[in-house]
Amino acid sequence: MKLMNTLNINGHEYEVSYANDTRSVDLNGSKEDLVGSIHLVNREIRLYAKGRKLSDMYYTLFHEILHAIAEDWSIVPL
Image (cartoon, rainbow, N blue to C red; front, side, top):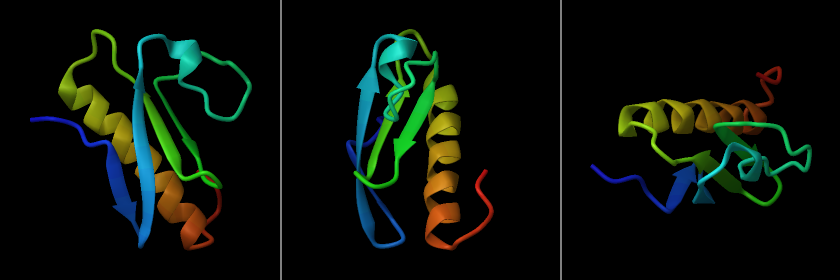
């Protein structure tokens, strides 16, 4: 199974990209070591991919999707 490059969340299209080091994942500028990041304004999701199992990457993608849903539905930030 393959991961996608775009994703529709609540009618908004998000670009999904992949990074080979954890510091390149952060889309919000803090340069932390992360395995997933979402930029809600630019509608981008980035996942750390190097050496990770596909099931782990899906878990991280689902986590980032929950952030987008929480924002759209005005739920307390996760």
